[in-house]
Amino acid sequence: MSTGASRVPVLLYHAVMDDPPAWIAEFTVTPRQFAAQLDAVRGSGRTPVTIGALAAHFAGRAPLPPRPVALTFDDGFADLPGPTAEALAARALPATAYLTTGALAPGGASLLPPAPMMRLGQAERLEAYGMEIGGHTVSHPQLDTLTRRALHHELAFSKAVLEDALGHGIAHLAYPHGYNSPAVRRAARAAGYETAVAVRHALSSEHDDAYRIARLIVRRSHTVADIETWMRGEGARAAPYNDGARAVGWRLYRRARAVVKGPVFAG
Image (cartoon, rainbow, N blue to C red; front, side):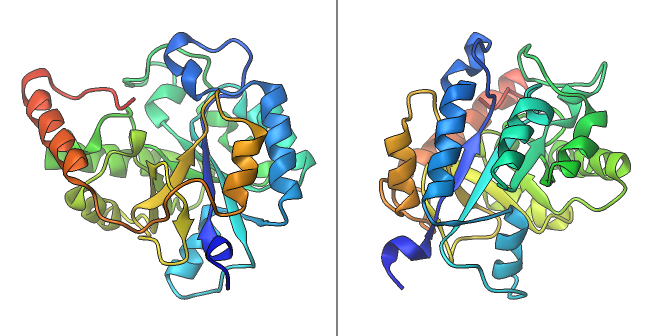
């Protein structure tokens, strides 16, 4: 098996819209960009899978198909259960959507700045389009700065809310902005999640950590050529790999800041 074939691109999208709020604009693609990128994924010869398929592989229950690719969506912006899900379904592309429950319910507690968001009741519609649902916490904090009690609440309560809304278990988690630590990963496992995705802006692989799956974050500046490069298993390093000194130092700084200022938006 070639190196490129053993690497797994897991793409991370946020909103798909022409005129996003300024705070999320960098991580938003236009509908035209999105359509062209999906066509590049379809034309790559890779096999589209959900995170559930990666989970089955990591757990030893099933092999991965040849040259897999996964598409993921964080937060739950308003376009997701409409034109975005329709664009995916039209190309027979499955995906995994990670929902921030506090941002999708009226009066919910969320650190996300204002933006057009879907409603929690539309999660069933995503599943009808063939999307898999995962948790993305209640309020979107930097999980690796929270107390043990607050961390448990963010992981367990958001999971319970989604399970009540959908009537089935939720097995997958996305760390807000990818922030995690060994303690956070242990808490995710203890809360009943089978996988958790980070960011890392790296290719995943058949040997990645099931509780720190690497994703490639799609920015507005990325082109179809970038997508094609990732589909070849190129253009980024491949996980697993250990955190560097800079990442560890940044975590320690954010923890100290959180002691003074309290929970901070992960973004």
